[in-house]
Length: 416
Ligand code: C2E
Ligand code: MG
Ligand code: MG
Image (cartoon, rainbow, N blue to C red; front, side, top):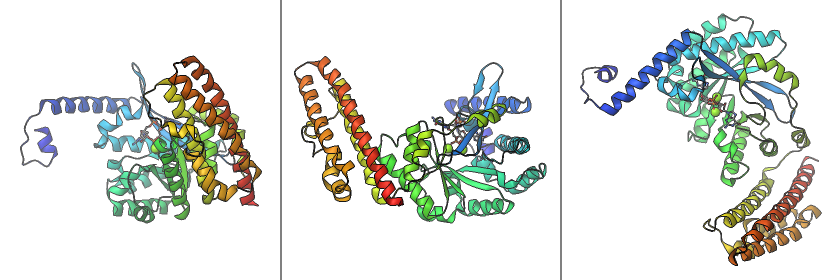
């Protein structure tokens, strides 16, 4: 009955026990969250966003946490999905904006001119009164410049009703507020759509960023989003930067803004200033800071990933004979993906550079060792194969070292 009423009345629905249980639990969670909101058990954590190239802290993202006296910290995805289609998500969204503006006032007073972003759910964003309510909230904090508030909406939400999204984004921007498309890459937007959406920033989804070090498709996708951002004159930020190497690769790809555990985890508001005072960007990032990377040199990065993947697959094969591995790729140093790049496009483009030519003997030795490893495995000398893998990793590091020098040489040549 409840569902039939919710769907506009004047209809009947067949009672479904499983669905009923689901509804009940959704109902229960909604009640608990409502109580948590009233009892001040919701709080915001803040995760820094930094410029990798300059080491500057650009701002923060406000992330909701439910601190339950009995259950401890409950992450947002454990309860927001159950309420995201109800007015409770609007109340929470407004509470988040209010708290963030209050926090901005405090940080402004401490001399920090950060931009802080909030996540707004689709249901909230689509409310006709969204803009008026936002103006009302901003009016409560006249000391806070609207330019320091940013709204993040999911790429998929913006695509849902592009006319509405476009209008609302434009209206908010007229107030000074900035807009970001969150989880970009998961919503299938075409270039045409993106061009029509006036969002200031594109946030590359962490699922792609996390795997750029291992997965050439994700690397290519991230590279494409960065180029697209440049063409359309948008800022691009990468989320899910978990390690120093992610940062290095992103700088090389031309994406300077980043957020992720490798920089800082989300933290309570009262820890932020102390964190900011002691934050020092990874020194490795600044070594890549002043070099420009040309799109033509992108295959060089892909070649590096191919090499890493080859080594990883061979080791997997040693650990588990069933892993798919083509022995031909081991026997012939010209047949692996890296080898094909080296002999072809690589030689054509960098063949005159000493750093490039230096790679060949080590690559050859790597394959010879790979062949030995395969033979040890086949003759049952397992331990010998495992020991040889350690040596294989040393050779891999050597090649990565050569590639790194080559990449720097190429980038310096480009920027001169
Ligand atoms: P999001 O907006 O994409 O936020 C980024 C999420 O990734 C956060 O999870 C953050 O803690 C996590 N994260 C950041 N860096 C890394 C990293 O290097 N590795 C990994 N594995 N994760 C990282 P969190 O705080 O659990 O939030 C999850 C999602 O919940 C958010 O995704 C956002 O969609 C939603 N959310 C959070 N707060 C709010 C809110 O106040 N309102 C609404 N409507 N949604 C919110
Ligand atoms: Mg977000
Ligand atoms: Mg995201």
